[in-house]
Image (tube, rainbow, N blue to C red; front, side):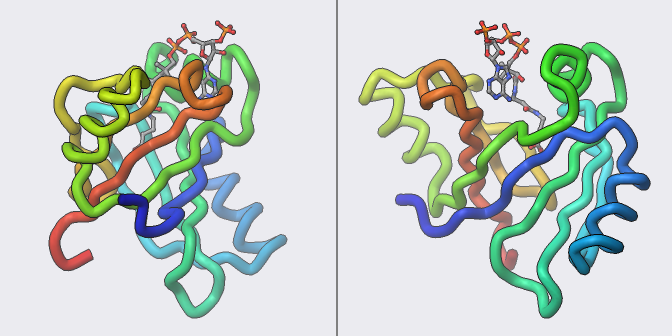
Length: 139
Ligand code: CMX
């Protein structure tokens, strides 16, 4: 049910500084930016020139007690999550629950660009926070 590696998420203290770093040093291009209040993040999706492919998601905390704020306080800036694209996040979550993995949410929440997302607990996925992303129709 995984159709692609959607993105890799990096926790950053300062979104604008991180965008400048990745565009200047690696030539990535910003495809999208938004604030997700519920997740407590300002975020940007960056792509290799030409667009498409796996994105790098830069995640800056809006609040210290957000998931990204806590991650940076504990681990410092760095890789925070791996996101798999799925065609049906509810079915994917249910299939993984049935295999004994803990999903963070009972029901999918809103992710980037109105996608629907859920997460596998990192302790049940080899120390990696795995996000499941069902893109919004048309994305
Ligand atoms: N990757 C790997 N391990 C992680 C982790 C991460 N991103 N975040 C926490 N952990 C580890 C901790 O180090 C800790 O390990 P130890 O017990 O060995 O010390 C363990 O998991 C439990 O951590 P915790 O401190 O008890 O839990 P937190 O309060 O930090 O919450 C988590 C962790 C995953 C539940 C929380 O970050 C969360 O709800 N994440 C999902 C939402 C999210 O990440 N949103 C931001 C992105 C939004 C988006 O993608 O759009």
